Amino acid sequence: MGTMALRPVIALFLSLFSIAAFAAEINGFRVWTDPDKTRAVLDLSTRVDYRLFTLDKPDRVVIDLNSSRLQASLRDDLEFDRDHSGVIQNVRHGSPDKNTLRVVLDLSAGSSIKSFMLEPTGSYGYRLVVDLYPEKDGRTTVKQLSDRQKPHRDIVVAIDAGHGGEDPGATGRKRTREKDVVLAIAKELKQSIDAQPGMTAVLIRTGDYYIPLRDRFEKARKHQSDLFVSIHADAFRNSKVSGGSVFVLSRRGASSEFARRIAASENNSDLVGGVTLSDKDDMLASVLLDLSQSAALEASHGVASTVFASMGALSKTHKKDVEHANFMVLKSPDVPSILVETGFISNPAEEKRLKNPAWQKKLARAITDGIQDYFYLSPPQGTWIAANRKPIHHRVVRGDTLGEIASRYRVSLYRLRLANNLKSDNIRVGSQLLIPTT
View 1 (cartoon, rainbow, N blue to C red):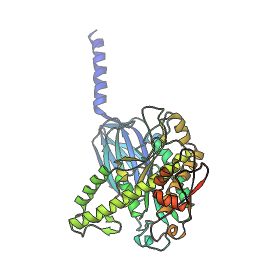
View 2 (cartoon, rainbow, N blue to C red):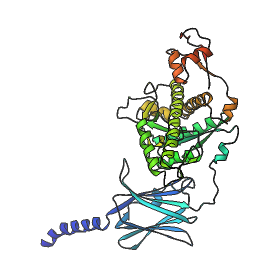
View 3 (cartoon, one colour):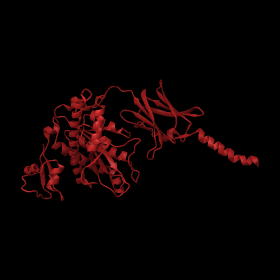
View 4 (cartoon, one colour):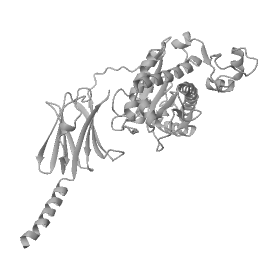
C-alpha cells in the first residue's frame, strides 16, 4: 500500500525533473537571405543561455544551447531551398553532453557572425538570431556620385517594401501578410517606374528578410536616390475602415532627427547633398543640414501631393489630404521621402484586392503617375526629364475646383489661369487643363 502511494509522487518528481532539465524547447528553424547576409532563426519556448563559435575546413557555425531540446526535427521545420538558404548548406544537431543541445550550420564559405536573442513579439516567442556575413569580393552596384553628375541622367527612385523576415507586419482575416503584399507591390512599382523614360527604380528589399529602419533610408542615400518611397498596408481594429494614404515626415520628427544628426556630425562622415559634415564646425554643419532638410521636406510634400491625387483618382482614400507622422523611414536629411499606405489589410474587401496581381499593377501605375507628375513639374537639374519633359494636363472630374487643382500640382492660381487663358475660376467637367511647369 505504501509503495503504491509513492508512485504518483515519484512520477510527479520525474516530470518536474524533466521540465527543469530541459528549460527550453526549439520548435522552429527558419532562414532568410538578403544581399548582405544570411539570417538563421531558432524559435524557442523561453530565453536560454547559449555559446556560439566557428570552425573551418570545412566552414561551420556551432551553437550550444544549455538545458534545451528539440520539439521537432530541424529539417522538418526548415524552409530549406536555394532561394533562401544563402551561405547555409546544411543543418544538423547532436548532444556533446546530457545538458547541452548542439546545432551545427554547415556553410559554403567563411563568414563573420553576429548573434542575439529577441524578446517575444506578436505571434513570435523568444528567438535566437544568427546573422552570417559572407566574405565580399569588393564589387558594388551602388550608384556613385559621379553617376549623379552625368548629363541627362535618370531620376533614381528607391522603393522600400515595409517589414519582412521576422517582422510580418499586419495580417488580414485570410492570413494575408503585409510583408508579402507590399513586396509584390514594390516589385510592380519598380517595373512601372523602369518603363518610364528618364527614371530608374531600386528596391531596398528584394526578398523576405528584415532591414533595420534607419538602414533603409541610408541605402537610398547610398544609391544617390532622388526619392524614397516606403510601401505599407495599414491595419485597424475596425475592419470597416478603408482607403489608401500618403504620409510625409512631421516637423516634430524632422526636428528630432536634425538634433541627432548635429550631435553625431563630429564623429561620422554622413553626406548631406554630397557634402561631408565631419570636417565642418558646428555652426556650418547646422546651417547645411537645416537647408538640406528643409528642401527635402518641401519636395516630400510636393511629391506626396501628386501621388495622393493619382491614388485618389484610382480609388477611395482614407483621408482628404496628405498626412504627417514621425515614421523613422522618412527621416533622411537629404532625400525626399514618402510613405504610402496602399490600403487596410484588416478590411476583408481591401485584403482581397491588395493580393490581386491585377490590382497591384494598377496601384503601382497610379503611384508611378504621381511620381512622374511631380518630377515633370520640378525636375532636378541635369536629368533627362529636365531636358525632355512633356506638358502635363489634368482632366477635370466632378468635384474639382481650380484652387484644389492648383494646390495639388503646387502652382499658383494666377499661373494656372494664365496657362489656360481662363477669365474666371469656372471649369467644365471633362475639359483638360495645362499645368504650368517650373
